[in-house]
Length: 460
Image (cartoon, rainbow, N blue to C red; front, side, top):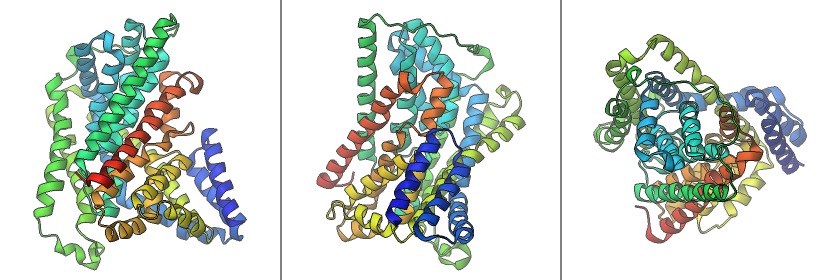
């Protein structure tokens, strides 16, 4: 009965999330359903002592990254830097390379720390104008934006400030630059594999006589004089990547952080916080760079800061609610059966078991960060112990976990997918097939390549 309760609860979470129910209310309801069906309660104790405690712990750990990332993304958008970067890349490549131009523009922005939601809003008007000029079907815009925003810059490229790359640092004592060689290989597979698919789709559409289509968009106009130049626009992104590398690989590891063993600081190992600290410093540095050097392009800096701050709240509480849901499920006696089954997959190779667990939970919750957090909260220590016994590097665990979070998370009920389709005015019927290939199928192939290379050649 307990296992059935978990399955029905997860099915309900997927179904109602797909139907548009907010996860803030959906997650505790589905958790309560599982508790009642599996063991009959106690509901209030489960809600306050397990669900809310786990939710709160997640917010404590990752709120600074969500907050600073949202503020930085809003500053980049409102100053016009995001638009300048996108325009420059698109202009250099030309309309004949519309898909590649949009993908790379999204990639540069998201790798620099701009929120994928901000990128989607900022890039769509430019992409729509470019696709119309090149007479490329509008339905391919969603795939191009998804490829540039939700794949290689989210989970694979070393140093990316995406939350999916930051979460494993807490569990494996790594940095966001873990397994850089494997990450670059995975990123290349995702990028070129996704572009190959989208260009294939473009060629088929052209042969069928399909063009942009009859679509009406109220697209904003951008004036060159109202935004910074390309070099100045790119500088904050360089600051994010540079400071992240400097502090995670050089500055913090060289400091005496022994005081962290004191109870007042949580009696924690320095490796558990260095990755998060480095990202905080990098994002603060980038925010100050925009405020100091691009101040005249911000029409209302206070409003931008306020909106960026408020924009961080819903994403982190959505994710934290999913983590709270996962904690409740993990507290059920029946979860031991599920856990043992997942851990028992490929018992001699914890890397494969980790990849399956993260993919499964990310797919069930429809969230890369939520699924990753649930998997590592419940099974992270187990995988760390098994990997240590087999001499497997924590860096490999980190990169596999991060890349795994960006696979099956992109099922139709994924919040980012739904938001992207809403922003672009497209539908699941017209565009989800391409999103499925570039966001799910190709990243899973990249994951398989990383596992094969990592287990045979080692971490690099």
